[in-house]
View: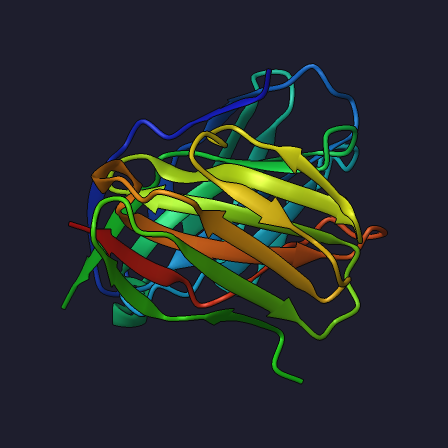
Length: 114
Length: 112
């Protein structure tokens, strides 16, 4: 079975600071992908960043980057220069290539303070 | 190009009533999914489909049925609604050759 664990229900960061959200996962598949999704108050699910498990290089998207530790099954999200618009719920998710299913963690509610 | 749309956006039901949620996508995606989101639980997979005419159970399928008669549509049915089905429901679609899922705006369902 595949599982995703987010152990930080809520976090807070000051505007312009850096924050890291944690995620651990478990899977028996070799072919899998990891994602961070953002859900603002509008409720829309927005893809933030994607990591292919076969790639060693950590993915980056502008102010967002990940620290992918495959052996430790860890996938953390770093947000640099935090902005008020980053306030949202963030979900870590695991997609198994064999199962065609996306499994979500329980989410981390991030509040960016002015 | 509307992406993934869901109908309706809000609905209130009484216990025992039935309803159908419609998901439509215009991206010619093969895979479609229904999730429910509850506080503190993240998104949980209800049912999914990897092609027209096929469906499969997800993590929490009890009390729901689905149909995929057309490639672009995926229907989620509640035959006899229960208060435990009060939730926000999300539909998503995905190309078979790519692993990114595209989500609809969600449907907030309240069962009294």
